Image (cartoon, rainbow, N blue to C red; front, top):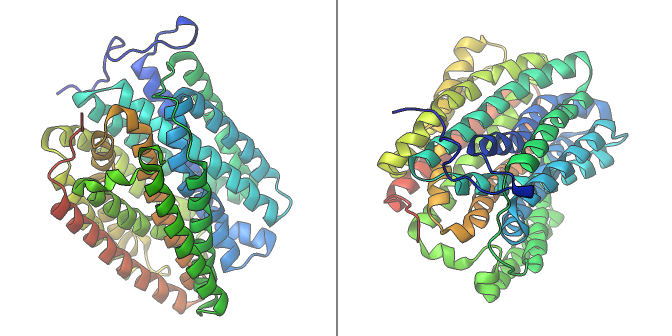
Length: 470
C-alpha cells in the first residue's frame, strides 16, 4: 500500500478569501502547531536541574515548573475543543499558537520563579487552545485509511519533535543557558500560523454556549488536588493541609460532575459519552498509560543529571531512542489500526510498555547507559509506538463529526491529567539524594510497569473496536 498522502482534491475545504484548503498543507500546519507542546514538554524536562539552580528552587518548585504548564492544559483542553467547535477550529488554532509564542518569550526573560510559573501557565492555556483543534482539523480533513495515515504521520512527527527537543535543549542549556530553550518555539509557531492562515479552511459546528462554570470547576479541582499531592510528595507526610487540599479537590470534582450532569449535551464533557464501554475503556487506558509515561520522562533525565553526572545534552541524547522508535513506527500503526481496529494494538502496546518499565528497575545512573538505560527505553518505545496512533484514531472514530473537537480535547486532557498527577507525585523521588534517589526511581519504574500492563488489560476487556457513531 502506498504511504503517500492524499491528493489535493481529497477532502479539500475552502479557506479565507476563496483559498482552497490543501490536505498536505493542513497536515503540515497541524503538525507544526501541536509540535509546540511536544517540544516544550520534552525540552523542559532536561532543563529542570538548571532551572532549580538558577532560582534556588527545591523539589516542589521543580514539580511546579512542569505542573504550572500541565494544570491549565489538562483543565482547559475540554473547553479548547468545545471553543473550536463553537468559534471555529482554524481561528482557535491560530490564536492558541500566538498565545503560546508570546508566553514562551515571557518564560525566556522571566526574572523570578513566580513569573516563570505564570508564563508557563499561559503556555498551558495556549496549548489547550491549539492541541484539540489541531487534531479536530486533521480528523475532518481526511477519512478512511487516509485518516489513519495522516494521524500516524501526525503522531510520528510529534515523536520526532520530541526526539529533537531534549538533545537540542540540552545543548542550549549547556552552551547558552536554559532560557534559550523557550525561544525554540518561536519559528515553529510562526510557520504554523502562516500555513494555517493561508491554507486551512474554517470549520465550526454550532452556536452552543461555552461551559465556563465547568471549566472553572475543573481548573479549581485539578489545581487543588495537584497542590495537595505536590505538598505530600515533596514533604513525605500527610499534613493537615494535605488532607484539607485533597478533601477540597474531591468536593470541587464532585461539583464539576454535578454541573456537567445538569448541562447535559451543553456540557464541555457530556457525561452521556460514558454510556459507551469503549469510551470508558479508552479514558482509563489513557490516564494510566500516559500517567506512567509522564512520570518516567520527568524522572529519568533528573536521575541521569543529578545521580549520574550527565550534562543536560547527554541526558537529552539518552531520551533520543525513545522518540526515534515511536516516530518510525507510528505511521505504520495508524494504517494497521484502520484495517484491524484498535483492540489488539491497544492491548499489546501497553503490555510491552509495561515490560519496558519493568526493565527500567535495572537502571543505575553510574553504570553504562547501553546496558542499564537503553534496553528498557527501547522496549517502552516499541510498546508506545503500538499505542499512540491507534489510541488517537480510536478516540476520533468514537464520536460523530460534531464532537471531534470535544472528543480530542477530552482525550488529550485525560493524558495530560495523568502526567499532571504523576508529576505531582515525583517529589517523593526528586527529594532523594545519592543511592536513595536511584532506589526511589526504581520503585517508581515498577509502579509504572503495573499501571501500563493494567491499561492494556482494560483495552482487552472494554474494546471491540471503536467505530464512528453516525
